[in-house]
Structures are given as C-alpha cells and as structure tokens.
Length: 386
Image (cartoon, rainbow, N blue to C red):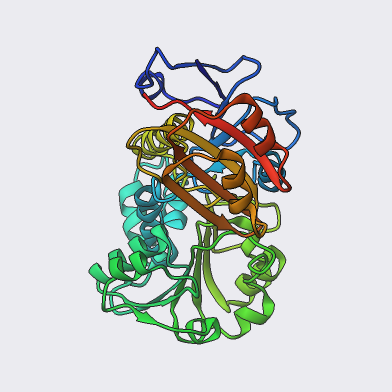
C-alpha cells in the first residue's frame, strides 16, 4: 500500500481517483511514500526514509529542498503548464490595468459614495483617468515557456506586435509560438524596442534582480512592465525610483512588497496568477498522476532534479535505480543482475541519472543489496507492475 502525505488542501474529488487498493492519503501520517504539496515550506521537514517522491501542484519549487532531495533519491515533480491559462489571463488583465488607469478610476469612484450628484461628478472627473490602447503597441516576452507562449499568442490576437526572448526555447515551444512573433537573441534588443515587457522566467542566480536601474535605462521612456513570474526578478528599490521619475509608466506585479506600497502607478496583486478553480484542479490532477505513475511504474515526467524516464512494460521483473551520473555504472549493474534484459532505459540530468531494467529473472535479495552498494547508487527498488 502506497502512503501519500498531503500538505495544503488538495481536492478529495481528485484524490479519490486514486485506486483505494493501492493508496491511502492523509495530512497526518508517518513513513509515507510520497508528498503532495502546494505552497507549504518543506525545507525544515525531516523526511522519512520511505519517501520516494514529492509532487508540487504548481510550477515553482522554491518551497522544496530540491538538491537535498536529489542526494536522498527523492524525485521532485512540478506541474508546468497546468496553470498556464490562468496566469495568461491575468497577464492580459495586467496589460489593460497598466494602460487604462482602471484601478485609479475605481479608487476615485469610491470617494463619490453618498454624494447625490455622483453620476455627474463621475462624468466630470473621468478625464483624469484617460489611458492608452494596447493594439499596435509592442510587447516583449522574456521567457517563452508554457505561459510566455500563451501570452505571446494572445497578445498577437489582440493586435500587438510581439518580440520574444528565450535562449532555452524548446522545439515544442517553437512549434506552438505564433509565426508572427519576432525572436531576438539579445535581451537588450528586446528592452530597447518594447512598449510593454512581461517577465516569464524562474528566479535563478542569473535572473534575480534582472530588472534594475541598468536594464531599465536601456528601455523606452514610459515602458510598462508586468511581473507574474517571481518577485525576485525585480529590484524593487530601482523600480520605485523609475516609477517616480516616469521612466516606467506602470508596474504590475503579482507579488506585494513594502518598497512599492504607495508608489504611484505600482499595481500590486496578492499572487493571484494561478488562483482559479480550474487551475487548482489541473495542477492537482497532474501532480497526482505524476505520483501514481512514478510509484507504480517508475515513470518520471516533469521532474526538476532527475531526468524524464518512461520505459514501456511488456513483462519481466522491473528494477528501478537512481544514482550519480558516473561512468561504467550501467556495466556494473549488468554484471550484477546477470539476466536477460528485455527493456532498458538509462538517462542522466546533470549530476544524477536514472536506470530502469526489465529482466527475465526475479532479482534476488543479494543482487538488490549489491546494486545498492555500487558507487554512486542512491536508491534501488523492485517495482511489481500489475
């Protein structure tokens, strides 16, 4: 029986899809095999030796000690793309909010409450909230992953010219991207040409603070910047100065911070990007599937610390191994098993690798123990596939 510990609220409707003969789940259990989590911080959690995987219902994994998990042979999954439509829709909303002084107008309209001639006053004062249309303007997309591509295509549909930048653009991503999107190889070229800039990259050592006084200086006067990716991408002190000077006409962020509270034309949202019923269902459904596929077959998809792995099963006895990416590991494994191999998969990702073998003869306890003792071997388990 596989035991899943659930952090945060995951819909029982989704969890109930798990086979009751194979799984039990609870927010309070010990010696569990898997974790399902949304935003709970796991850095200080003492994981049991039985833990095999963690699935994050969402894209970001900075609440999970990913490197520590890799060393312990704990596969960490995320759910890229599951919330992409929700975030895309909010980004499109942000484009309009940055252009039309809607928030300012709403706040001012509230001051008319109780005044007998409020309608007439509204008509008289609406001229203070004139804005701009986005059609015909140029939008720069920094990061062309699942969300960035959806934003780019939607902006094209609304009549915007779109410039994209992503040195890691995948083949699938390129196919999904509108042919009208102009692609640049240098980020500075995007900054210099765009009326609007939308950020869609993870927070890494290279991207943290990428929007700062120097990069803003390379942008158009009156640029409008949207950040629905990670708060750390923007130097908030520099952004505050740019807003006050008018260099940046508006900044819409899904991340609140004290440095921008009260700064005119800074619109701060309480991390609403994926906060839709549909998105939460999509993320949780994908996370549950990742866990069940992994525990039942060893399939790895959307892992952030181990390579994707999918070996179709046609019979035999399956051995699943996680190990360091060292030379001669595979030959050492074959020397120990000494059985005909009907299926074999071996892939690496950085310092870590995964090997799946389907062999004719059932591995003995001694063979499994010898595999576990190999240099760089992190975990070994036999998977019985029904």
